[in-house]
Image (cartoon, rainbow, N blue to C red; front, side, top):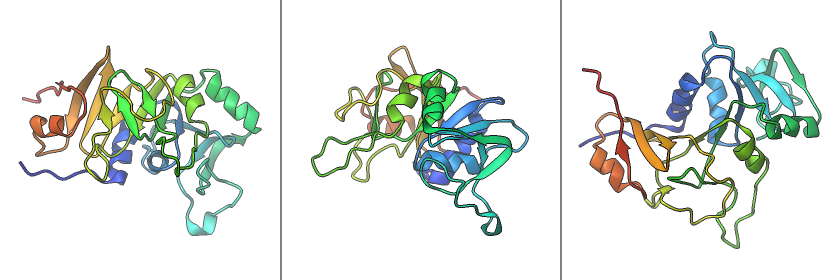
Length: 219
């Protein structure tokens, strides 16, 4: 069958639509930061960044840029009414104290039991970059991972067991990829949505763990 993969922006847009009203959310560096551009304007969603900013918005227009307003990825952002700044330590207290409802993170691998690997590949030449990932993995109430379904070489990134260093154990609740959405629950991986034209057998062949078809029929 013929299908088209989602772009990174399309993945971010899907996540933005799925974040509930009233959520306190942290967006990780890289692909997750794109989510800020697509959050519905009619929903109150409070964004947090570990560098010490709360209630920020999407990137500014060129004429509104303020180099003091950045997220953890050093990307320019805007500040919403009521937004604030804080000390780095206070910002990490928000993460470690269980005050975040959702954290959106990128990943190198996710295991079927919810284990997350996103800070190091284990290769000698790669520079470790854990940042606040470990704090977010254990501190947020729900973890959403967004990533391409496979590596550039076609190797599965959703696996039965991690082969990369662990960031957090049994912490991932949902995975958004360029091919589908997967809910992880009770050591099982439930496919709740797929791109149009993709056969379930094709998706399974690109995945390193057993999948369960859980898409509700609209008929």
